[in-house]
Image (cartoon, rainbow, N blue to C red; front, top):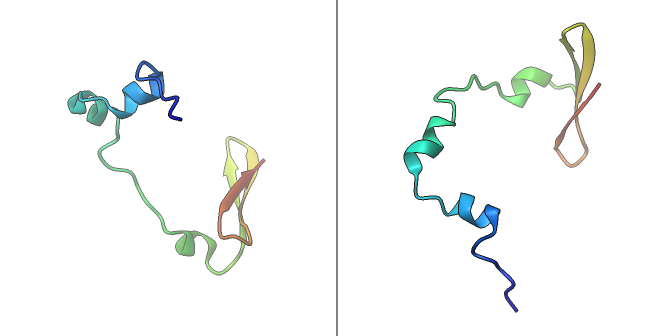
Length: 68
């Protein structure tokens, strides 16, 4: 049984026909780095941000986790 409500907010966002408004919120260019370039064969790197150290790790499943 389908309990989908057409007035549901998520439905309205996905089905929005106002493409001009949607594209204005998306950045035109994002600097992109490959994870291979960042990790250089390691499974964990440190990132210093505003005086705090964060650890970015590659899990066994190949996903990324960021911890403070």
